[in-house]
Picture 1 (cartoon, rainbow, N blue to C red):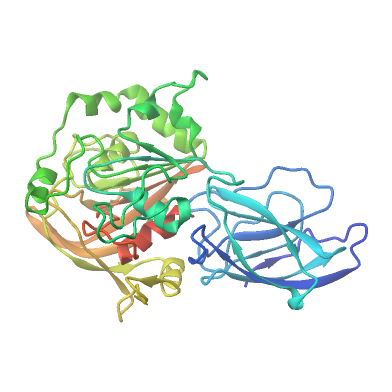
Picture 2: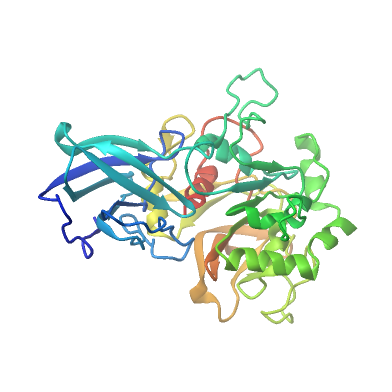
Length: 415
C-alpha cells in the first residue's frame, strides 16, 4: 500500500482522523481499477483536479499511482483488486474523495459515519455522467475496440444470442464518438480553428480503418485482410500536416491506440520509437514504406508472456469467458485471431529502449521467419502516450463475456 501524507497538515475543524476503505470499479460495476489515485482535497483548495499522465508515468505497479498536484489532506492508491485503505482527517460525516487514473477523473462524497469507515464500492461514472475524458473510436474492418469499451461500461452489449449483433456494442448506446472513418479527426467541423482530433483525450483506431467495412465472412477473412487496399485516401489522411497533428495531439496529453493494420498511424507519425518490420537500411528516425510490416502469418495462436507485473497482478483479479481465469497456469495469456498480414514488431528502435514499454510478447511466425516478438507496446511522447497491439483486441467470434486479449486492452484503456 502506498499512502501519501506529505501535505496533510490539519486545517480548521479537522480534529481527528478516520480510516476509509473501499473498492474502485470501472463503469461496468464489476471490473476493479488498479493503480488509481484516491485523495481527500485540502479545505480551501481550488486547483483543478490532477490527472495522471499516460503509460510510462508514475503508475508502474499495483499499489502505486500518481501523487495529486492539487493540495490534499491524504491520498492513497488502489491495489490490483481495486481496493484502497487510508486514514483521513475528518470534520463531518461527509468526506469528498477525488479519484483519477489516466485521462479519467471524477469526485464523490461518501458517508463515513457508519460501518467503520467501510464505504463499499465506488463505481467510476460512464462518459454520459460527470467525469473528465472524451473518447473517439474509428471503426475498422477487422477489429472492434468499441465492443471492449461497451463491455467496460461505456455502452451496452447485445446479449441476445439470436441477434445478429450478439456480443457487440449496441450502436446508439455508446458514451463516446464512433466514427465511420478517420477523416473527421482531421477536419474542423466545429469551426474552432483546429482539427477535431484535439477535441478528444483518447483516440482508438481499429485495424482496417481505411477500408470499406465488410460483413464478417470467415472463409474470406484472411484473404481480405492480407490484400487490403492502399487507397489514395490513406495517403491523404497521413499527409505531413496530419502527421504533425497526431504528434501534437499526443505531445499535448492525448492518447492514441491502434491495432494491427493501423500500425502505420504510429509508424508514419512516430517512427523513432518502435521498430516495425521493414528494411534494415531505414534509419530509426525515418518512416518505413506504407504497409511494410504487414507480413504476419495467418491463423497462428500464442501464449503471450506478460512483461509488466502490474498487468499480471490485475489479470489475476479478473475473470475471462464465464468465470474462468484470464491467465494460463504458467501465468501466460492466450492470444489468437491473427489474420494474414498482421503487423510485426521487431522491438524498440535503437536508442528508444528505455522509452518503450513492452507489455506482452509471444512466439509468432511471419513471412520468412519466426521467433519471440513484442505484441503490445506503448511509449510516451510529451504529456501523452501511444499504444499498439499486433493482434486484434476483439476476437472474430463475438461474445458478451471477456476474452483474455480483450482484458489486455481494457487494462490499458485506464492507464
